[in-house]
Length: 84
Image (tube, rainbow, N blue to C red; front, side, top):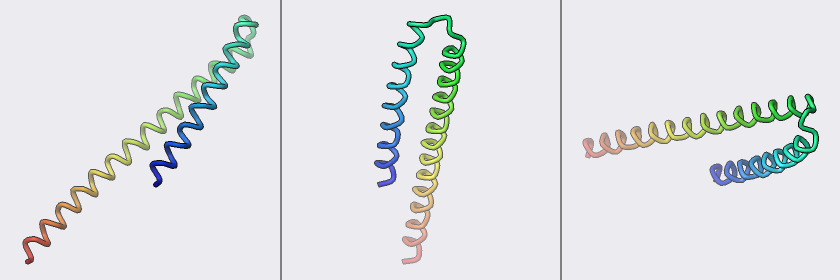
């Protein structure tokens, strides 16, 4: 359930990011020498890379936790088999 919720949040983020980038691109094409727009563009790119890194870290952490759970469950099953 949590994975579905996270996927929906990710989709909302991507939609907002694409929309923002399209608007910014249109503004930058109309005013290519505007220093504030250039700064805004650079900062949005930094934010998007940061969010992407957080998402990757979360996925890797979830994968590691899943692997640990699998190994722990396998060990517990093996211990139960030896007891019976």
